[in-house]
Length: 176
Image 1 (cartoon, rainbow, N blue to C red):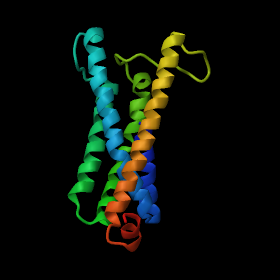
Image 2 (image 1 turned 135 degrees about the vertical axis):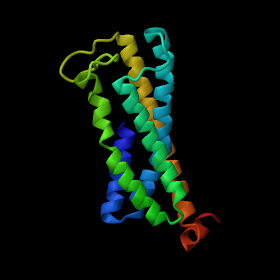
Image 3 (image 1 turned 180 degrees about the vertical axis):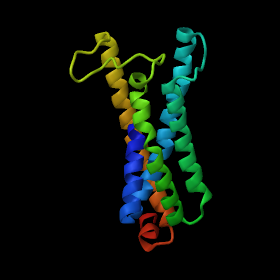
């Protein structure tokens, strides 16, 4: 969800200020966000089978997370379908800004609707309601996923920049 917020922020900045780097950053974040959304849906299905007795239920959080995955895939497909990078950036930015409405729906879905998902186990106002070992494991994995996401997005941004600017002198000089 945070990757989508960052993607929408950069896309909106690119749309408002007409900056190419912002739009490229949004484009670089999309595949990583799609991967993370797919992983959460896939691992959630593995967890849901023994807990709920089924791989999938049309739960509010699951359905809104699936919509998030489709927004990522739609953003990537829309960017790829339009040949002109400036037009692709504008169309992608509009889709990202419209889709950002889904993020609070995902986050608050367990409080707004009576769903199968439990409420939050980590809260800023009280102690975590999970075992200390699981908490440290979860925090370590969250840090690892963030480091991965940042590294891969920055590498993808570099590749997008080199691809878009391949006919300029600075790229020819950098690749020598």
